[in-house]
Amino acid sequence: MRRAFELGMETRMNAPPRLIATPCVQVCVVDGESGLCLGCYRTLGEVAGWSRLTDEARALVMAELPGRKSRIAPEKLAMMGAA
Image (cartoon, one colour):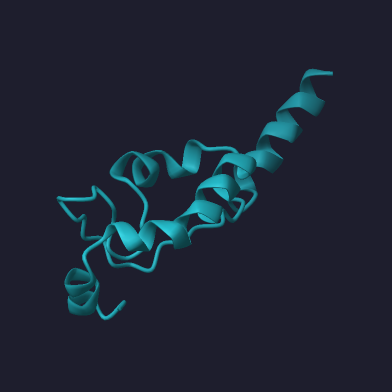
């Protein structure tokens, strides 16, 4: 029985990490007024805890992101090429 457990651990340790859906576009600049990343529109807390969220929680945040764009001043988005 112990050997089966050890083999299971080896399999998990050697398996490639599971891909996590992310809205990150490698533009990590946080707008001081809105508190949102100018690239993906997440908060710092969401960015920092992203890998610990469940798939369902990530999906909820991702569904909210398009609506958050309006919380950032258009001129700031234009500077980032996201207007």
